[in-house]
Image 1 (tube, rainbow, N blue to C red):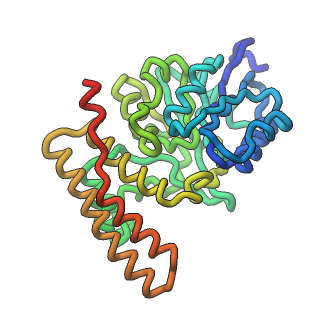
Image 2: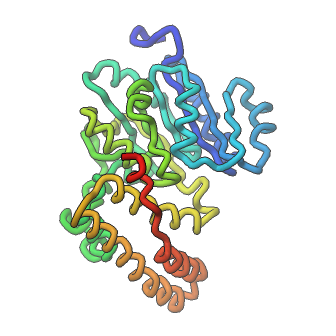
Image 3: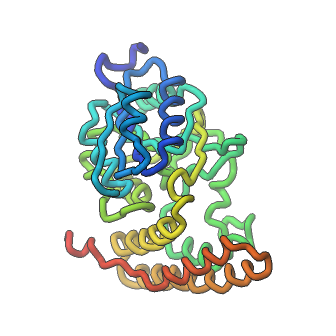
Length: 320
């Protein structure tokens, strides 16, 4: 044990699962294989999976703690459950579709304890073939919504003005303060997470990480991208199997973020541009599907059409 760390539990690794047990088993095995020099526990919160998760886990990982929900409570609520049970000084909120390839937890723990201030840290995410993924991104803003919904980022991919992800698709080699780190790997002190109230459970799936980072920065903390260690992020561990669930919740979460954090013209513009983007995507993907005979594009067009009729009630107003 390194002299920096405690005799108790240093890190509680929390992993939310929904019908992706194959990914989950590989994820946990990789954490156990590569994590050394840190006392850690693993807590799995299962959102009512139907693929015999408990049987598999009792056999393969008897020491892993499993919280079995009777319904799908969503990503944020499930992580909050895990944080309540956690005994570690730090939390690592980890996606089930990730794989460790080195001792990432130790490296980030060591960096945190040698740093000053309240930090929320994400590492570099790479694909299975080693290419760098977008691991951080800017806070939502009406201009970002305009450039993304009107396909300006596609038309001007190398423009920092038109492509909000221009910087974020480059490989950054130095530790950098950013707005939002991707929720696949989020490392922070447990007491800070609890003080913030954890994830806002009004976000069922998507944008809960954006909202957490936004509130963390507002409270005086710093969000850091830490590229000195990396993990593999396979992506789509759950959502690829449920496209309607994916796009529906993405659309709803964008609106909910605007409801919570924007007011006046900024709110109106953000919501208008979001729906304009949905309207544009219906014919674009439909025509593309006809030209390419791609069934998945037909489905995508139909899903965007259905999203046009979704508008979540403003639950944040009730909490004021």
